[in-house]
Image 1 (cartoon, rainbow, N blue to C red):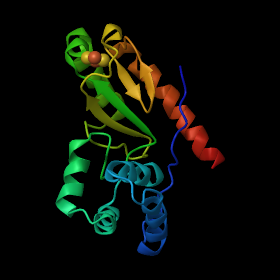
Image 2: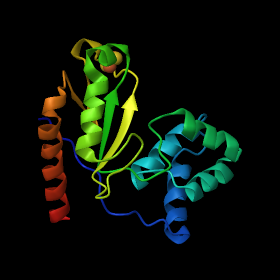
Image 3: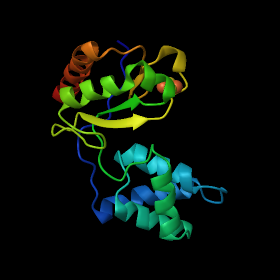
Image 4: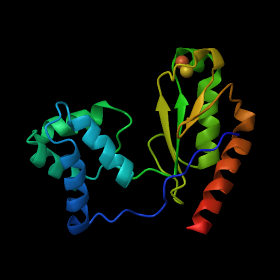
Length: 177
Ligand code: FES
């Protein structure tokens, strides 16, 4: 199995006093850049793991972009999240090719294995489950992405094994933190 670097399981400090200097630094680095909103949001999410409402409000104010527009961008792009995600973001492709080759059964196996539904994060904050609409690997369907790693021709019967590998990797990472 390929491995990816898990993001920290620790909760980021979301107090205003911690958030503002960090957001200022990110916003300043895009000062004068046209279309700065999306890269700013990406940087904030990379840092915090998700986009909390106070951060969105601050970005809206500082970039002088209406909050409704900022919220609209966050809603439109599926890679943005306003809720904390797990260390591993598991995305099941339900595009046409993956769907007809068993994507739905793979999703069912994952919901069972993880004990969560689409859009939820496991209690241990190791896994979040989402669906995707084609990852550009249709010839290798059905496809599951875990963070940035593509798993091809995934079989429902292999889901337990796949998740167990990430589970043990994630737990080991936590132990050394
Ligand atoms: S439909 Fe799943 S990768 Fe294209």
